[in-house]
Image: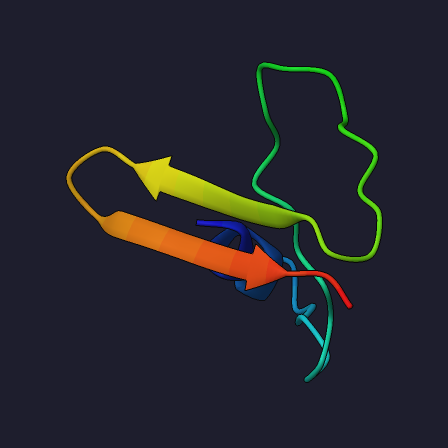
Length: 51
């Protein structure tokens, strides 16, 4: 949606741009050794381990 809206204005998202989806919770600080899993209803999940 963002890409389409920008395209209508003749703008684009440069390659490598970090785009956040937003959230309904506060940010959570992480430390080395922490594991975080995000589950998206109907889409699946993404996990990250911080070193």
